[in-house]
Amino acid sequence: MDIVSHGLYGWALFGNKDKKQFWLAFGFGVLPDFVAFGLPFASSIAGMVFHGTPVMFSKTNIPNYVHTIYNVSHSLITWSVVFTALRIIYKKPIKASYARLLHILMDIPTHSLAFFATPFLWPLSNYRFDGIPWSDKIIFLPNIAILIIIYSIYFRKKYKKTH
Image 1 (tube, rainbow, N blue to C red):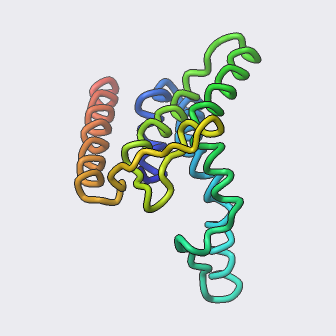
Image 2 (cartoon, rainbow, N blue to C red):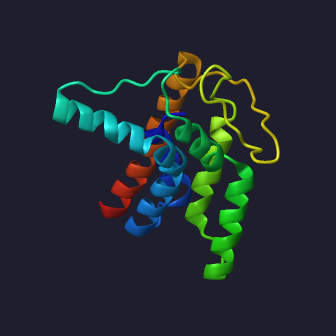
């Protein structure tokens, strides 16, 4: 799934209470991809700004650290550890952190072995499910339609409350 969709689903399901919860849920929703791909994306943008040409990443030249971070950030095991730590620290579950869990669960069937299949059992296992890439129209178009429906309903309800 694309990073923006992850943030929007996180907000819709776990952060629609107020602005603080929005940003927290949106942040947890994008976190797994942001930590893995943020630095390469930023360096590509910097290359474009300072040198006039972006650094283009493909399957063959993605830095190794990206794969390591991706393993950690897309693991149900590491999510469980972080969730438990947050629960102990705050003495209650952090509802917005479920957006990270949703991100991982959505990525399992929407990533293929060809490119960044989700290592959801890492570090216990390297098993990865061979799903349908989120960029395939069979996933991408319904995803956009579902988000449009969710947000149409949300904003319609919000409009009705104020008018």
